[in-house]
Image (cartoon, rainbow, N blue to C red; front, side, top):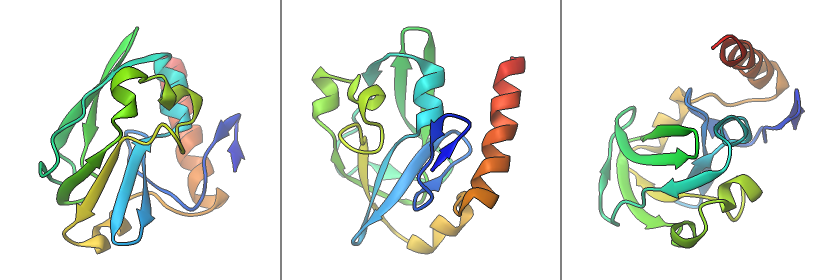
Length: 141
């Protein structure tokens, strides 16, 4: 769904740092959303943690970098990294080109999929006010 020029699929779960999470069977796929990748500019580096690394909801576990920005990736849920997008090692700009597809970042095996309920999820009535507030916030910064 388009909100103020940003593609924000309503079937995804979002954290307040603008990373998305999608349920894929018993795993979760995670990446950076359209708002964040446009705000960051050209992505030049993505930290790809080793498979088996523990992830804790709300705790940092990786870094991502653009030419003008250094960001932290936080765990959406408690779990374990079971896959990383190796293509980002040689081409981190995949995030800018296709943030919801080829630019995915991590696969996580959640300990408790119910933790997804803590994330932002829903239709336009949920996503639009959240995104509008962040657009306003970042325009002021």
